[in-house]
Image (cartoon, rainbow over all chains, first blue to last red):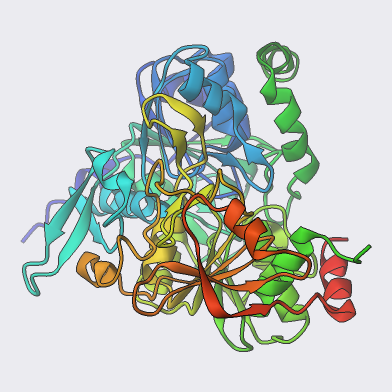
Length: 279
Length: 247
């Protein structure tokens, strides 16, 4: 008996290309885009490429919007942000995010917020091909009333009331990793966050890497994503700065502190983006 | 002049609550200071769990973010985010959870989402992060925040994390299996929920503060314990260890 192979097994290996080309081919205006990396491996270079290519009307999904989405929001790329913690870690506020939510600058944005546990389970459901995931959480909180993607659910076995969160299915997920080989197999280590689930939940994916190597050092378990679940791989050395890439770079904590002053003022923010990212 | 400031008093008071060998879910800022101070002093076997997935992290100095490289390098194990929330926090493997907030009410419910109306916020705060599930599932929750009428409010602008709800029995009715807030540490003193009524009661004053000062900084008629105590001032050893971490 011949078993029909699922479609994804017929996909070619990941295509190795440049970052501008990958973004141009993968990310379209109006897309739902998840750029993940929990403090570690935040794909800044890819975020900046989106900004340079002038993407608009994006729904930006990320557990911790961090500076990368503060920049995209401040530049007017986002119509909506889906998140669970929108602060500058260890420093304070994300001022561009706050300006958009509190004062509608540069334009009003829609927000949809969850807890971290809710967001990770939404990605797990997406990666698992399920419409929702179940967790203990949210009950009694105001979050329950603020999002159409969370609802109570009764356990069919025990009758216990739990919480269901809807699957996340981004159009595109973008992550950064240490290495890929020429087939696009991705080696990512250290704090792995939610990146595997975010890629598997997405319709399309881009992985930027510090370097493409002829062959990955053979170590069982070191490949987080085989090349056949990744669409594009692009080299972006230092692409996680000012966050960090374990084994390659350190987090620039001072820049995270400096961003507070840069981002507080609209004009200063725009000038900084023009000088350092757009120009 | 005393040789310590209010922030140090808070960190020291919180650190003393952590027992050796306990498992502690740590957020950045004062919780991380307190947990690392405890590990450097009376609780060398305290297990620090940061929500980035680093379990048993042993940083030599205070990290700025919950995902700093040193946390991963010194951890017993590093797990992915679905695991930290689903396998470690949710089933009740954590003894102590630390939470800060912008607002707390008399039942230890917390707001870290918004000040003012949700749709027209006066101040948009970062939001929930891991807090709702930390509040739901840890055996005990320690709440740490500075005392003022803006933070100790009669009614929260938003319920981000459930403490003791609207009183006795509420946690069980909501299916929250952890014990909820056991202690609130501020720059003025310590508060614990009354075992019957679950409402916060002032149990200790920090050295140099008064009941009037605490009540003046609280937006409801705060109950005061009959056997009100005074927190022991930070010792030279505690202060030295704390300052060494922040160097």
